[in-house]
Amino acid sequence: MAKQNELMDKAEDVADQVLRHSKHVLPHIARFCLISTFLEDGIRMWTQWGEQRDYMNISWGCGYFLGTLFVIVNLVGQLGGCIMILSRQKVPIGCGVLFFIIFLQTVAYSILWDLKFLLRNLALAGGVLLLLAENKAEGRSLFAGLPSLGENNPKQYMQLSGRILLVLMFLTLLRFEMDFLQIVQNFVGTALIILIAVGYKTKLSALVLVVWLTCLNFYFNAFWNVPSYKAMRDFLKYDFFQTLSVVGGLLLVVAFGPGGVSMDEHKKKW
Image 1 (cartoon, rainbow, N blue to C red):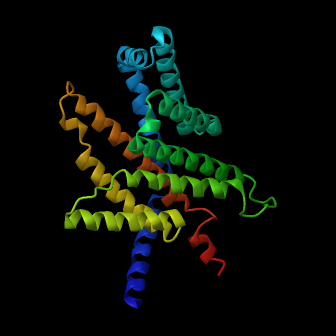
Image 2 (image 1 turned 180 degrees about the vertical axis):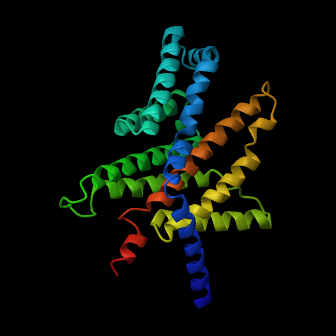
Image 3 (image 1 turned 60 degrees about the vertical axis):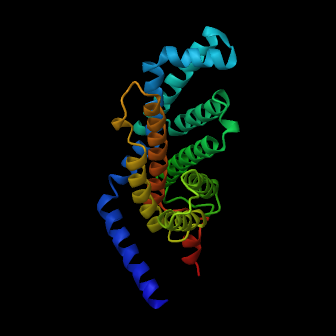
């Protein structure tokens, strides 16, 4: 047990060293990764304007006008929201727009009835929630000298909700196969996800999961290896950028910690 604790402490020291050397760039990388799926989808709305409009018309029988309106809302909403977040201007409005886009696409693409895609959309919402919590933290830092109402505030619960929603993404990656290596991957990944959800050794767990998810993403979702005329390219691209967004959410957890509603925070009070 003592050796395990010593090994864990060394791993945390390594993680802290990585964070100290990357603390100025890590939040920017995290935000960019998190909004990457919205950027890609917004650009796709422009490059596949006709296909998206026709899909909505065929699926819902809504006519070309409403189909075109859907494409415009997605195009302007996603690119506009991403610009607000990356420029750090009107971030709450940008996050609100992205929340609306997630809801709109969940209904329009009938994602409610597909558990895998529903979990991924909820994970995306968790990432946007973490962006909102980070913005609130920045706002508080401007008034650091003023009295605080304590740690029991909405930001802490937004961080908790964001963490829990992020872990849903991992559930879509589990493969229930009778293969030893797959069983080990599922076990280790599930353990890391639980640690992140309860907020124990959160930064280290999130950092390990970032590395793991990134490797899996580049291995399984290498859409650039598939010819552009094949439908599989779009599916892999969708998976790639959605996973990249969840990696961005986890990087926010690494950069800013789990928040007050976590075992890590309560350990400091023991």
